[in-house]
Amino acid sequence: MASPTASAPPEREFRFLLPVAVIFTGALIVSNIIAVKVVDVSGLVGGAFDYFQPASIVIFPVSYIIGDILTEVYGYREARRVIWSAFFANAIAVLAIVAAQEIPAAPFWGDQDAYERILGQTWRILSGSFAAVLVGEFSNSIVLSWMKRLTGGRFLWTRTIGSTVVGQGLDSAFFLTIAFFGTATIPNGEALWGFWWRAWLIKTLYEAIATPLTYVTVNFMKRLEGVDAYDVDTNFSPVPLPGRWFHR
Image 1 (cartoon, rainbow, N blue to C red):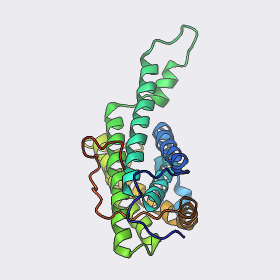
Image 2: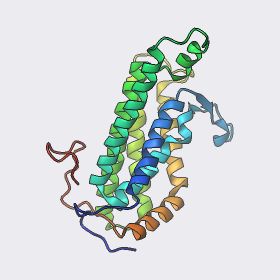
Image 3: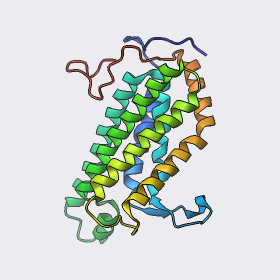
């Protein structure tokens, strides 16, 4: 494994950062599209009780695993750039879907209602989704970076799971509060609190189960890139300073 470095040098070009960023961005965009479907995952808890979640549960936790890899291997500053890039890409996808919905359909195309039911989302839900992504992903990255310095780079599992506990908890809390606060129940008839803790629990378990794969991937990426970034004297503001947006 490559020896630790204080941070990635400004002139360094990484061979695999772009593919990792593409997977991260794709996971966010796909999860936002398929979240409209509510799925029954009661079987995962042995059928002890009804357990419903948005279909994005199958892909959204991947963004946190990739976020861990970004911060662990490349450092917070690179992760910050990827998070913002993915956020804007997601916004473009949403705006395109909304624009397509508003353009009058061809007279012979009879699926406008289906399009609106499946892809049409209220602005309150979209706002909750956007806020949740920013708060959750940045919290995940900052906590992981802080814990890496605290542990001296040891015990990777503590920071991948620990950062997910914080990030996924805030993500679910922000989304559900903005999207559904003030209503008695969420769409599947379950109380808001119950929906939140169950969403948080299954996403955290997802991360824990994937820990061996995260270990293998992180160590493999560190060897390939020849870097193991530690965020020393790093500005952890989610928004880069003016004039430094595109700089590491």
